[in-house]
Image 1: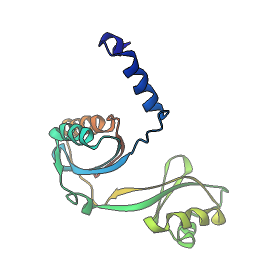
Image 2: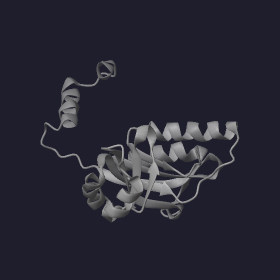
Image 3: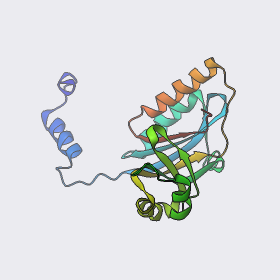
Length: 186
């Protein structure tokens, strides 16, 4: 309807619909982009995007980072660990997460929500740990590679925290953004 209001020719509209659905035989190439920078109050942020138009995404992310500061590659990644994060739940009440972490080859573990445990691994060991955890009484719910902060920013006032949250929400609402990693305490 918006296309008709803009006097877009029917052929153009139909072609755009078919292209988006992948029916024209034209392949759409997606590129993975990673942006680093700071949210307001020097909170480090890593943003992962998946886009079919790099120029559009770069310009839109730059606009979003006006409230913060877009950095160069490596400007904040040095303060994050890239690792595997495996969420698993115990299959039995007597399952020991510490023993499972040690025996399966995880680096560390943290208690999660609703009885789940988060096992942390080297990025290269994630698959092996996922396969080993069931042997030690844990059922894997999810596994992903991602960034975890080495140190976090804390001590922000409620007003400052609201600014950071508004910034992060704007970034997260962008269509091309897949993951946002933040070095924020709490």
